[in-house]
Length: 382
Image 1 (cartoon, rainbow, N blue to C red):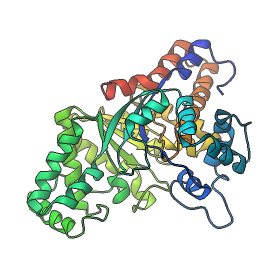
Image 2 (image 1 turned 90 degrees about the vertical axis):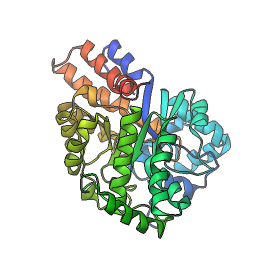
Image 3 (image 1 turned 120 degrees about the vertical axis):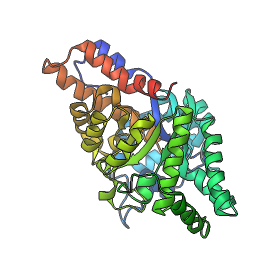
Image 4 (image 1 turned 45 degrees about the horizontal axis):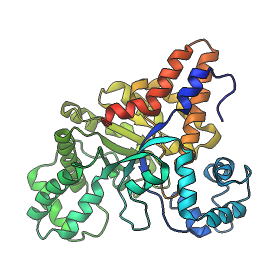
């Protein structure tokens, strides 16, 4: 799996247990082929007559996940799915989560669905620890459905965010995917927030898209994060899960004003996914002391080219600002693939530096430990 010729100390560091600082829950139920393909395709159906197995993710499933289920590498899709069904969801999930070699899963609770494994069960099946990352938009949605007035909404939002944050290790937001990252960085005025709350309560079941209400939610989350000493994960980058925002509006460089405004609060920010804007994210991590970066799901989605993404991060972002996240979502295969892609990509990028004589083996091993687990343990206070 790792490049030949890596020093033993570097190989051991790359294969050490990881802290998966950003993953979603996985499905506990049996899946049809159509359901499975929708999940590995990021929620976007394949065009008629095609399959999501003809993507970097689909090929990686057949290459790296098939052996975990006792199949030869590159097993045909029908054979793979039949074997998965034969084992059952619980057994397949357990095998794939354990194969990831993760010591702790930090699970984003952004989707309420009885068919998803709760964090504790995901940890049990994966033989790991687990903690919760609170999705602030989910909290807002719950509050909006219960509030009777703008005053109730605003008071309830602050109280409910604080209550749920009490048992979590971080907060996350998908504001960029709902609206775009080109929002006004300033905290909105009280009057504009009250007006936005009224608009929100007129249709509380819809996803939050009002820019003023989103900004208020973000700044309320910042207040809670500062009080609790929690980091804030911020989704960025294009992709099939980028929601309503046009791809160019998910460029993390658009966050520069918000990151500057946030710096005095001392709240760590982790830019998630970021691809294809990972170089901009790496620059922000280098420019601002409270900003970190994780390309997460991009490594799985870029397949054999994932090492180029990691290589560019190593060129630009401080090593203590980079974290590992599988971007796991929906199926346990994505947890395993995220770990495989990370280890292989980082291993190749480190090997090039070792062969060029730019790094020592001790430096390479230290950086591998930092990115794989050490940085996450420090940022999330694990």
